[in-house]
Length: 419
Image 1 (tube, helix red, strand yellow):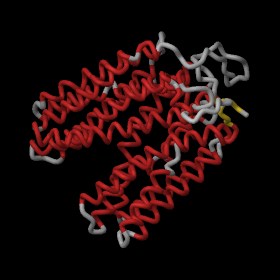
Image 2 (spheres, rainbow, N blue to C red):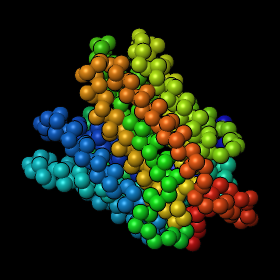
Image 3 (cartoon, rainbow, N blue to C red):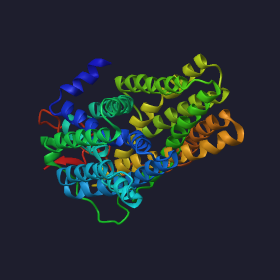
């Protein structure tokens, strides 16, 4: 298993691109907790903190596909780095100006969110030209999903460390400065500088004109909803047991499960259409969420949370492959960005629904939202099977790392090309 990942990381530029992307995405992965801590430190209410975090999330959801389309049209360096700088300046404005003017504070988080660079989609567009073969690209997708879990675990810890050493304002400034450096490392690399999207058909819908992509986005809205609801349900469960540390254990177990699942998924060579494999993985994901409604004791609940997390990273990694197969020619970065946006909007919806569910029926009902989200995601995939069965393009060949031609690969893997 480790040998396969080491093979990817030994490929020229691979380690730099993965590390730079994760570091560049650090501001986005920690923005919500950083905004909340800063708002509270400045004397703002939890309501204001939540509103600012929600506005940031909405702005990010709007900006990602638009910037992704810009990357496909103009290349990565012209979009990613300016966007990272503007996003950092937005957070810097919030840190410096504070809440003397609420409209200015909201404007700052809107700028920070809208201009969050689409580094995640950009990395996935680069993998084919960096790694060459289909098998290595698929393994890189799994490694990417695992690395995200690590980033979302370490990121909040880094924010709290910076807050304890300096201040919430300093944390905002430092995290975003680090993010710009990560984006800079990516765009200065040779693959990023030379990558060009394939020629695209002019269409105002862009990537969204693909019916297969729309079906996938519909499913992953509900996957995001399931995950978002668990964050609220976990808090309710911890309150029921009178210990805040219980929430940390549940979230850690969920992340550990995702790490294990992603690592195992990437270690195996898979055959058959990824769309069919995705249906099986999402079915198992839904099956893992349903037992959480039992809300047993803390030890048993922690085990159930770990099991529930096992199929999340494989589902995300497999969805990357499906996106690549169904994205219209020349829209691969935009398509990946739409997946990120849809997942994020679904998570926000899950958070919003789980709160009232706790009030109406207790903790079990909030976990039922997660189970319902997983089932709904599966239903979407099953009901759109015919649409997903037809990839957007026929197989193409990609140039391997040695300069020869590899065998034909799944549609989409050759659409990001070297100039």
